[in-house]
Length: 250
Image (cartoon, rainbow, N blue to C red; front, side, top):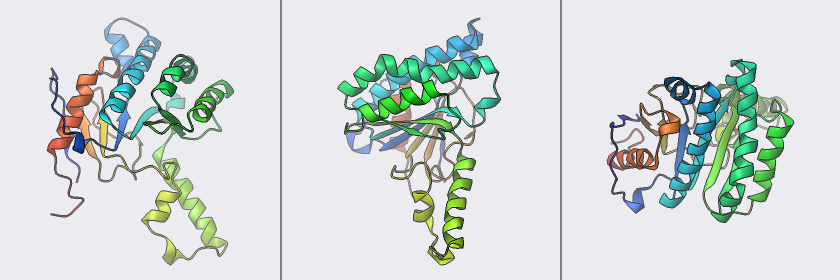
């Protein structure tokens, strides 16, 4: 069972074991709206400030030697938010990538997307797909945006695909195992997260990578995403390195 950690109020500079860096870190970037409200600003200002944190933490992960960084950018449930807010959120990938793509290229970062493209506006999809194409040959950190992503839908779609293969006689029920399920998830080819970070004080997964997080270590902080710094990120990794991962064994 994964252990839960809570951030200290004032993170200190950590000493990290270079041999114990998580290969894959996933982050639920939460608290943009509350951060803005606490400062008397509109929610959109919080989302815009949170975009700057994406760059900061991506570069920190790259410096540490993290191989995969998955960021929960927009869930399948976020469409329920007010139309103006959704439209603003849909424009952020375009703005972020237009500003940061050059630096991502220079740092050998590869951009990927994990989510359902069909519902995304054309301008959002074009920006993301252009970044994916331009960075496809990069061999450094994989920056994986979970955009219009929902884990329950992901698993249902995987089960449907496998079930159809059984119905068509291409597959026996006895052939179904964990590796087959994983191969039909949106995260196929990406290792499960070693560490999950969630900001803003919420203690739930919010339909994020439910299958993949089965044995991930979890670390939560009260800090809102726009305030989340490299030092907070290093603190999470330091806590991860303190833990013993037994995967159900002794």
